Length: 153
Image 1: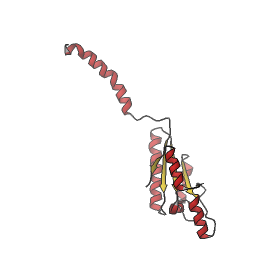
Image 2: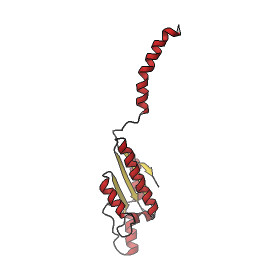
Image 3: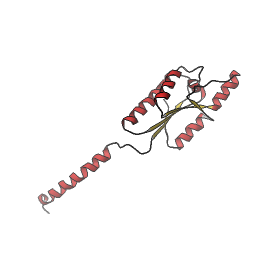
Image 4: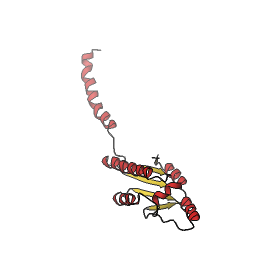
């Protein structure tokens, strides 16, 4: 068969396929929200600030794409200090982020809180943004089972 006779058909096929290939290459906003669980188990302001920076950057990225994102920061062990009203060095930043971002939540391990209360023989005050969960480790497992990406700064 003559190549010159096939050339118009080849060009037409290429022109039809080009928009489809471009569509596949372009990121599309998903109908499902992106979800991330951020794990903090250190009593370290630098680690918590990194987690908060990650959360802000993730929210901005997906916001720029027009896609919803859900972010949950889960603390346990020494990381609970980051959500304690009496010891958190990042309380103001957490308060600001919670006011500005309706897609972020902060979970605190009740096992750790109760252990801290037993040791101190007094109640441990938590930030108003903190939501108690029975176990921080179990909460991370549950979130991953629900399709959350896992991030540990």
